[in-house]
Image (cartoon, rainbow over the protein chains, first blue to last red):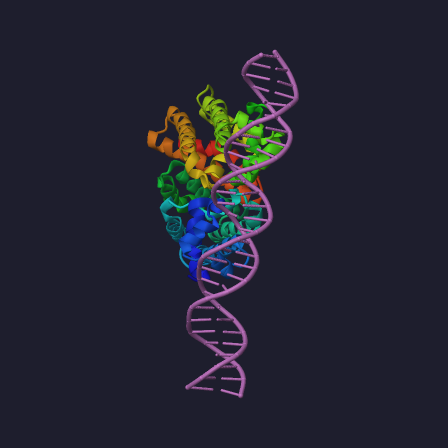
Length: 182
Length: 182
DNA sequence: GACATTGTACCGAACGGACGGTACAGTTGG
DNA sequence: CCAACTGTACCGTCCGTTCGGTACAATGTC
């Protein structure tokens, strides 16, 4: 298993066990690679593994969120596409968000800057759609924040209640809510 | 420092470092108690310490959220009181929510049931206010979920952006949003 | 073609250290 | 005196990490 093929596996472990719970022993078992082999592909150790996952998620965000929001179509339709992709990546609310996991784990300081930048670009992309649709800039920025807030909050609640339905409802309602001030 | 006086200290450490980052060494240093003393007050070890903090938060929730929501006054006013208390306990968005921390940490399975129950009672209390104000039951339940989602999401975003202002805005807007369907 | 060299992938075993937790002999205070 | 409490020293376990080394295909050299 190469460096690239490790990444989905790492993402799964991090989401399931958290940053501290995803130990090298578990990673070794899940990838089939010995610990020493993991250090061959990721000389920086565990933190480099997580950085690689963040690189992957950054690419995913660019391709599946930013590009879609920046693409053609009606604003409402583009926001619906975003929600479709989010529904996929969070598996309908069954999977937590790695960003939140890292922000609340013991290594939060290490990854904070990365997560900060990812959040900001996500918010800005939503706001850009709404601005293009005629919304005033400050209000659009707030709506962008509200979108991310709704997603993150719904994922937390879905985890807490062990029930994905709040997330699914939010995903379904979000596009219309973001457009309601237009 | 007794068992009870330890709890605010424990809460602070858990919020600052997460479940795994709040080590016994840090707890010992912060409380001024040796490990033996900690184990005298909390024979069940670290998990019992966290349980004690959850007991404390459960009492806090009852006294500051459930009781207020169930008390006298206009629905809007009661929701505003809830938001005031939340603003205090989360220190204006500077502090994360322990529930989310536990849900996304490595010991999530241990505390999941407790957090589940706390979330549900919180949601139900918001819904009860809205039902009393004339809202249809299912819709009230959804609005209750939306309230908790907004709080949790805003706390995540405030952590991620290192900026409490999204939380403060959500707190300010929440009462009106919850009442908008009345 | 035969042989040495290099680079990549991988592994078993062990490391130092920190973790949560315990045993026990004091020491304090009513 | 007795119970509550605490300091010290210690335990086993697991953590992330590193070491020395093997297998093997690719490349270079005569």
